[in-house]
Picture 1 (cartoon, rainbow, N blue to C red):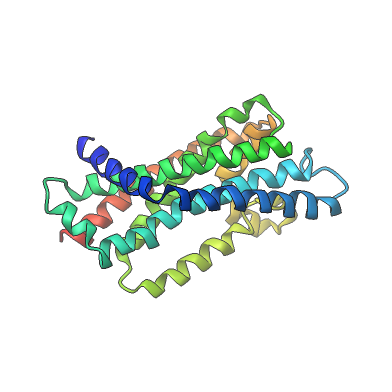
Picture 2 (cartoon, rainbow, N blue to C red):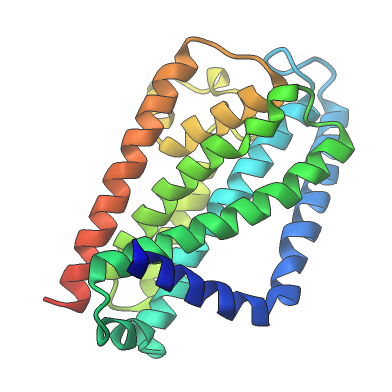
Length: 250
């Protein structure tokens, strides 16, 4: 853990040099998204969606997608540049730090960045009235677990990529699954076979659990979703550590 925290501190110090520029996207993007979807599309949705207003429904989806996307970008393009072009990982591994500590440190930094974005976007949702329950204060929990899955999966994929253009396929898959994960409309409107596929995505579980905390509407299904999300995060992080060792050490 000492080596892992050293990697995390290194990323924090780098971030503090450019924090002003990195602060722009988490503030502007959710405001525009909430206004566009919540009030724009929401004006066309007369009835409630899953028992809540469309603003609250889509607000949870936008929060989840934005935060998970942040974790993904940190562990794809950013990690690839440090791995290949800047040789940062080579320099780190020339010290007593091992590949597993490096991977965990990178994932921990991705979670920190995701948590930071979560707080900013949560403030926006509260201001616009999308967070309607006192349980909303715990909404970051499923987002952090989901970000751990996304960060681990993304770092594992990055460790296997040899050409930066391959990320085009990764991004295409992420943005494609985003539209069937229940972020913008209920899963119940999808065909039965597509609902099954959507339920297999940890992204879906993260969105639904976040929405439950924001609105205070809990179901028994959420217990199983939470267990599945935690298991997925652990497996993804373990795969990331093994993959980074094979890439950098083997």
